[in-house]
Length: 417
Picture 1 (cartoon, rainbow, N blue to C red):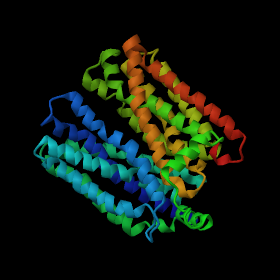
Picture 2: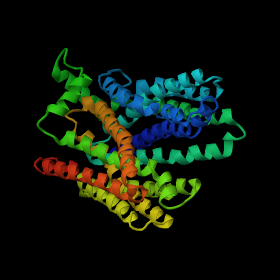
Picture 3: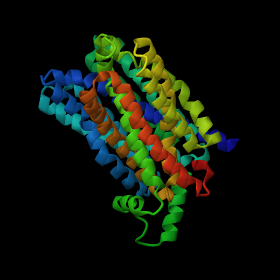
Picture 4: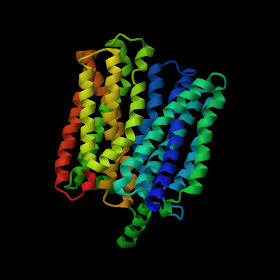
């Protein structure tokens, strides 16, 4: 029982760290475009600048994950970076509304994106550092729920504070980030984690000069290894990530073009599905730990695809809301467990941070390619078939997962099934 309580305690602190980080990210997405519009008239340029953080994340997150994997201090390997990076991100964030020119604003945006992108994989990597493989799904579910709730926090700050206190509004997420930094430094000792202790043991066994694991070596090992499970999982993440992001980013024009809704009505179609996702997150984690992660992911992906396919048949606003709620439940089964499976496939605790970064890279690549691909298909055949197009992309991800499942069935690692 004491061990379970410790796991719950550390899960709470990890979730708190992600909550603080995502509070600034979501408010950034809500309000920084407005700041840019004060200096930039081109909507395309605003969009490109807002997408810059995802582009930077593709390069930064695996790098910082690998760097933290190879860090050894009395504070551990993740917390020292969080202790420096989170306050620095808070300072840069609070400075955003005070900028007086496009050049300074963009410079601060780049600085914030660089620092904040280093924090994401570090906090997430604390889950496999502290939590044993068989309980990682439920811990990751709590973390994902905390991150999802920040959407509500950012919306409330925008609704209640921004109009009257536009500068002070940015201070609220920054203050949350600073307070949580103090809590993390005081309460979390990364050096006591099982993952860190296992990494130290691996260092001792490796001998002098062999303790560092370069990023290139980790990637090469995944690509050339005859065990294709990790490659197949990352491909599944990219394909399903493309389907997920396409369903979120293209829903507003779909609602306007296919359903005849106004811009505001179309933009609100996914709100109930966000609530459905939060409600489903923890139950699907428990199901995964009982029946197998790959099975739960596969069923969830099938539910997602089937729901969107059904939505292409009954095209009304009410039906679309229901469809997206069902699809969100299915997506939760994938999103909660995919990273856990990748962590559990890692050859040792020395590369957990790198694996977290590589997961983020494939997810972001899917987020970039998926909407572009589905948008191209829409240009060819029209908006009415968009949900079916996304369902087909999700079905491709399911086929890759099936292949992964067959390879997994040949191994002796039931917690990955």
